[in-house]
Length: 455
Image (cartoon, rainbow, N blue to C red; front, side, top):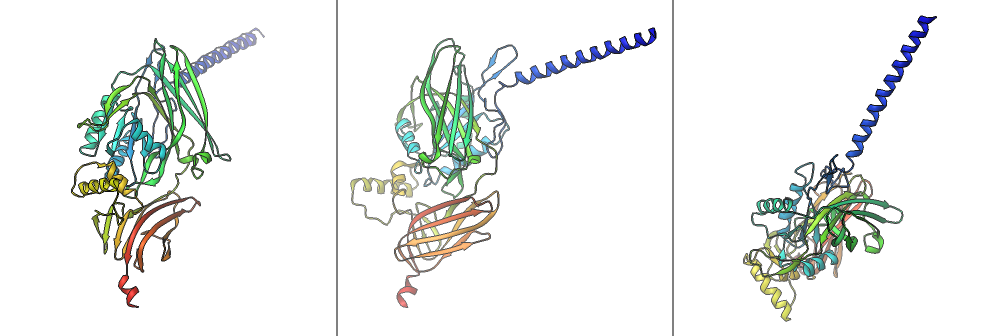
């Protein structure tokens, strides 16, 4: 009996000892997991995924903050800009070159978005397109000459600059039935003095509904601000701001939640004189440097389809299918302003200046985008993760309308029927999930005149 009691006591002690070791081990693992919640950064993939919302700063176990600066890049672009695809391609490649991004970028497509247009002209006093503003104008690149090299050099300078100790986190929630996005931003000031600045939360599309000059979609294209307000935070304090963005009221009822990418940035209230046209330095603006930036995708899922007209292009003439730079728009140019535009067009035609200046851009944004003489094959760039159901070609003019539906590659259509005057070419893409995308271009066309008048 005594032997059994001794064995039972030994077993009881062993069970208690094992339980204690398990509890200690479990508690240790829980503490390690919690300490990673404040870590900086996150990984990204081609769809803009970010695995950690708090991507601006990291904390270690000794309460010493390692403030890793994430850079904000704002790309001034336009659908009519022939040089902008060069910049867009480099930015997208560099952003996706590593699993942990060191910058987030927003494409400000000025001819498709009034707020983007006003921001570029009023805040940055932009001189031409394309132009890239790094960290609110801390560094500026105008044009495409050696762009990739210049971008990496200036990005490195921005990454390594001294910035205030600001911790920025972002959370988003989407209400599909109401088409509403709720954004919550927490800003923590780890400085020894009060921090004052401006918080901007950009609502962007991962794959834009607006194609560039080559017919490919822009990425992270700005739609609207979810938040745009001044902040003032005392030292060692934090401020939380929550706002709801209504897609319907903003004019974007057709957005897809899985295509939304949100960027939050805090700009310093202190201004510095910078120039939007280096090295000429003739267009001065007040730069408010970006001190903290983070971003997140609203929800996972397949991206919507996209379609862009790659041929014909804005600013070009087509003579029996051959592409040439267009000098005249097909409209009378009697006003003083239109004469200025014509002069700018002549400069562009002669290859000077680069990038396209804003006067030439105004000329391209006029009613007529391209001139067509003789039959032409309308070509498109199509992207559809879910697969293509069909592509519709609709050509509308005063003298009639042409309709054609294409169900397989290549998604193009040869326009060879009679045309005389102004037309709008519209292409509509339908994917196999029922999602759609569209693009259009206004042209002056003279096609098959001999056949029409000889009959």
